[in-house]
Amino acid sequence: MAAMGLSPRRLSSLTGGSLSSLQGVLGSLVLCVLVGGQPDNSSTPSFPDANTISFGAEHSCALEHATGAVRCWGSGDQGQLGDGRSTTSLVPVRVENLKVAVAVSAGGLHSCAVEASGVVKCWGRGEDGQLGHGGRSQRSEARPVPYLGLAANVSAGGSHTCVLERSGSVKCFGWGEFGQLGDGKTLDSLYPVPILGLGEVVSLCTGGLHSCVANRLGEVKCWGWGDLGQLGSNNGTEMSSPMPMPVDGIEGAVSVACGYQHTCALIRNETSLEANCFGRALDNQLQRHDEVWEKSVRRVMRLDEVLAWSAPMPTSPMRSVW
Image (cartoon, rainbow, N blue to C red; front, side, top):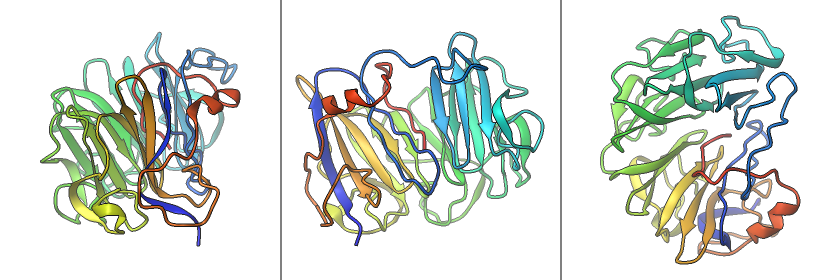
């Protein structure tokens, strides 16, 4: 049996820097830790100033902070590149109908961004309502999501989307069969629905079939499909929940990141930061090298070791990318 961490395990402590999850394709189930410094701006010659990159199932999107431009590349048959077409592109193409953006997220087969004005726009596959426009049709260019307050961030999951509003509240929409919308139901929603009981949220992430937040009190709460332990609740018990559940053993969280079937939280102590991860670890996402079930917080890696092989990241909180 592949190793899975059903409750949070500590990756390490460090004195500075930040943590980000990187999920290349759905099948790879990778989560990497990136520490300190400034972003690598040499990602591609046709988009030299990209300094936020989000990885979807078969496509990627990058945000240029200086201009607010968003460009995407990869598979585009569902319109997820946002350039007005439904074709694959091997080079970054600019997303149409999108003004100055401050956040971007690539999901399963769709993408979303937050404009500086606080408007959320999504594009790509819409069959499960993950674009939030009230229908199930796909969109090949950015379209606004109604019934939202001013947004601070957005996270595109497998076939659902969640938005963090500037007020600290969260709304989700799209596929809800496994409770991943967090509204207590297991139904799809074509429009944003509010999630209750979260407190004032400061960080948000979505995975394949689950979602998590960190709130102002340092608590982490998750909901959705949890059969592989990615909700981190009930002392490592495998279970799903259509409503937010507190993650056991987490205090002082400042941000969260969701992989496809695992979750990590960045914890601030008095003098350091550390990462705690839980969920499926088939391909060593939790940096486990054995094949046992671990249900207690456990250090599995020193983050300073990552500096030898990871690109540096800015010191802002984690963003949800997969």
